[in-house]
Length: 332
Length: 287
Image 1 (cartoon, rainbow over the protein chains, first blue to last red):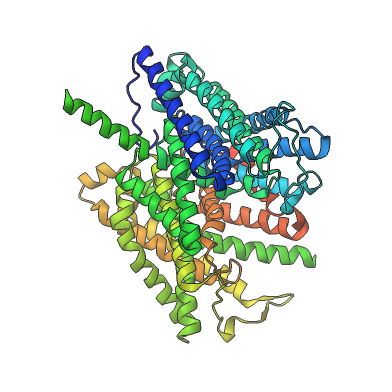
Image 2 (cartoon, each protein chain N blue to C red; image 1 turned 180 degrees about the vertical axis):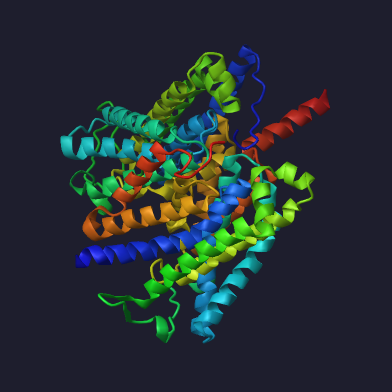
């Protein structure tokens, strides 16, 4: 159903785990490289991690289930606000508890938006997803007593992690905390998409009628996946709240949702690595271009999107993987 | 009573403008099955061209409308030929991305060329000020917008139901392959209806400039509204789109008048409710 995505043939179980180990070590090396190469840009890298969690979560529903949505920031923002409100109004400032609260908030938002969005197909689905994000946005704006409205929610001051690691001015603790969270989520998602449940989701993306003929409930599966996706996005949102100590209305914006989709497509739909690579590439280009000329930022995103759709529909990761595959075949 | 009447007129004018802009989207979506998020961008281009023609070149309002419609079509036809034609029949995600990419490009370029400020299109003397319709006075440009909406609806109905082009169009909508086999040149039908849709969008963008002000983020701000209209009305249905526009215009305007502090909360709530009950739109046909 979705963008001509290639599902790479499922490798033999053992080789898969080897590849995962390589993948995880690549992420670790990249994280270390980021820490030592850009010590003054850790805030940007930390934001990147939060957005990566959002894009990973979007990949779960768009890449693995084939649901096109422009309202995924609703899940991210709910997580951020859940954690932020818990800290600012209820005095729950233990960072790990805050992340857990954010995850629950995100999962609830995922459940709600899953139930609503999956009601429609095609255009109706898209419109429902857009309506959802606007509804969440307006609701957060209106409930300014709790959310701070358009001023944003401030006054979040998380305790040291585990009572030991304090959040420092340079954002080192936040960065390391983020990397640990990201790795944890990544490993869990790797297990999830390989599980029978993950395969069922892929099956639904390719042929929902056939899956329901085999006796599985398509809608229930998708709603479950939506809740899981909400959990991941909620962790991302909560982490953003913990690391930046503010939650803005823009975390619940349509633009945020659309950008997440752009990042996912840029990296490659239907692959967890694609989600990570797309986020890095997008935020990096954004940083470069908006430093050079903020006016052209939108034009460049647009051109980038058109180019990706026309010339690399599999995204950066997918295209690279195809090249590697071809090279291997040539070598044999 | 006063409020009630103002809401009614505003809702009708707003609904009619929505109709003129989004009916083209509805037709192309029904025909080519393309989810065109860039439709609002064409309305915006029309608004900019008209503003340039009327304000900077000092041309008349009528002439500005004609130039805007033609200019937008001239810009849009190459886009159809080189970009849209590649995504006919493609998965939704591809279509969404391509058209949102076009929207972003148009916004960025409009911002660069015309600047971030609001552009006005000066109204001719005849459309300024109020008009007395016996028991009440209403703004002339709103009356004009309502009139345009009615004319467009009737004109489209005639075109689609009574002319040979309409027959070919409906045939292509129902079964493209069969229509092509019977000698209908579907590519030309596609291009012509795309041009018609874009022209109507530009027309709506110009006459609606008083209510939906022309600025670079126009394309993104109202994109949702136009999509909602099509989705609520059912793609490809003229009566459906008309009902949807009037209904949504009424909900939105009432919300703005009575509970302005809630913004568009009720509008989106209503959208979710309607789409929930009618997933294929009010007048949509089953697949």
